[in-house]
Image 1 (tube, rainbow, N blue to C red):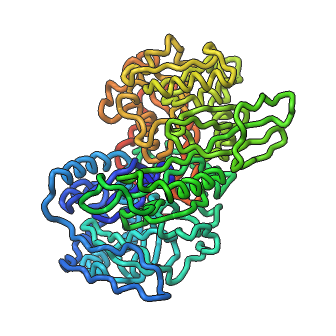
Image 2 (image 1 turned 45 degrees about the vertical axis):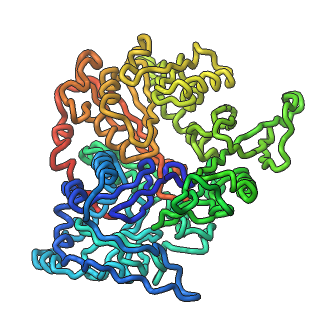
Image 3 (image 1 turned 90 degrees about the horizontal axis):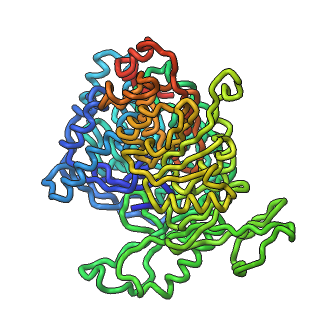
Length: 634
């Protein structure tokens, strides 16, 4: 189930609904036995003390009723025990979870962060301390306790402990230094507890709740960081990139350059050009047959629940999107009886640009709506409106580039950061050696996963020819239209709908020594087949953009090693000169496309390693102990 923030989803983690920042929407229901098997490699050593703790009682104590004026309590729902029989549907979800454990999933990221925390606390402790921890008695499930947050996971959740305890409590809406009242919802066998946030007992020096701009924060699961200073958010996101490369690249530290400071968004609120609120279907046995009898709650899922709550406004949406949200809610006040099931509402910003120079202004074909939001600049006025039809068209400007796309299709959702973002890519797409007359210059751009042409078009001025490749015919169709709208002929920017297994064979003879490949894959990253194709082609330079820095780190690790891990000897055969092709990392940096959340966009720049005979000492270590060191806590 998708929520308001692009790329944020919610899953069931051991029966507990949690926010996911790195995978598509999904739900999981897994027995402790299957979970333990999947997590054993990452948590077994660190979680042994807590795993040996006494088993919790079979029946949890129910929450006391909320009292008037008392703290708001989250996650009011019946307690469910681990175990029990699995039906066919749940077994299917188990298999899906097993696959996700190997692909930078929420569970895997959380497991590695917990392992690193426990490993860091074991240093300097003797066997007596470990034995004492193994005999620790855990609080009764469902009870309320005060815990201290000691670390922040890359999932955006706080990792907390009781004083003197090794048990880790996963607590949403918290930051290091907070003392938080939580409900111990479920003790996992791997040595941690899923907890519900109740209230702040003692705030961290990092926390300032006056910064919170949304009254649903700590209820709605869309944002995690509204209580933090923005510079602190950027520091945390740099740390997320660091941990991603240490945990997922399988590279020794000497092959990973220092992560650069995260580039912030010009807008901290009011930046999202797309929101997708939704409403649940009618309840009862006749669900899907009878229409609503009143307007249902329209909004997003709260933390710890699968029932949508009514949210009338979202301050991270642009002004035009928020106007659209208000209008759609008004429409539903009279049209609710047309629906017999739940639905998602599309809210996508679209821009009409009118030059201030009358000589440049085109005749008005359609009047500008009265509720359009006007944004003034020196040269033009942008009129922002909201499109709610998935098949309708939206228009977006990035500097002077224009892009037309179906409103329901993918396009980056923070327009304010796209000008500095595309400028950064433009400045780093070519190596500094390109200006050296003694070297072979790069003349060609291959934009894999090109979509509707964002990078092919905005980078076209740097190359003799650019080609965008995508397996989606519709994306290529709109990419060609966008190139035409930006005055780019096919000789400068062309687009190819290519089969996934033959992407680079469609290029028509681009010399690898004169080519840079641009990558911007989905959240799951590149598959082994694509990595093998890329290594066989062997371009001189690769620039990899990703909305999931964990799968990006995994893929970059493959490129640095020159193999996918599944076909080490054949992956790069037939590359440059028939020799094994591999890459070095030139730079790593994050961009904050989604302020107030735990999400960060990653950019990796890589150069092909030429003239290397055999393996370097660093490469001999890859996959050995040097690559397996856990991430220590900052």
